[in-house]
Amino acid sequence: MSFGQIFNTAASAMTAQTIRLNTISSNLANADSVSGNKDRVYKALKPVFATIYSDINTSTQEYRAASAKVMVADVVSLDSLIQKRHEPDNPLSNAEGNVFYSGISPVSEMADMMSASRSFEMNVEVLGNAKSMQQSLIRLLEV
Image (tube, rainbow, N blue to C red; front, side, top):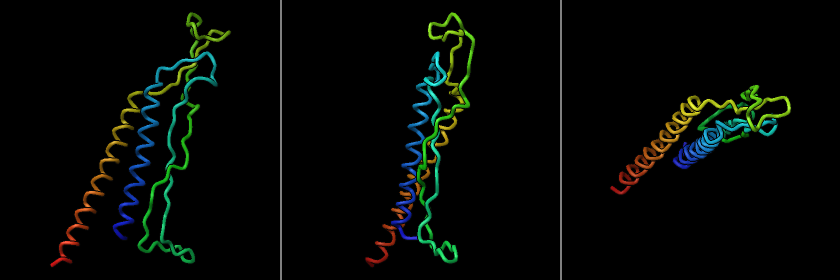
């Protein structure tokens, strides 16, 4: 694997984690949102990651010197977290007296944010190590 592939892989992972952090921040900002209509309440967003392999021998499916990049395949909204509550005194309630909450758990989102932040930091470290190795190699060639 070349240094360029290492840089590209780490950069793609950092981009994916940035999108993950953006969806988490959106979820946290809307965690307490309420609506009288199930279709209009905020739905939690989650990115779906996919792996993109390069340098694959397609005839034998051999992964020689392959690098794998991360791609965000989609950002999906989760309808399953929506909570319906009967609150007839709520000004946002519908005709039946129901309101709908996003159902987002701030604790779960914060744990996800810590994981995404740590993944981002690890990829920054990979970039730093690859840069250091590259500089060492250049110094060896100068001698």
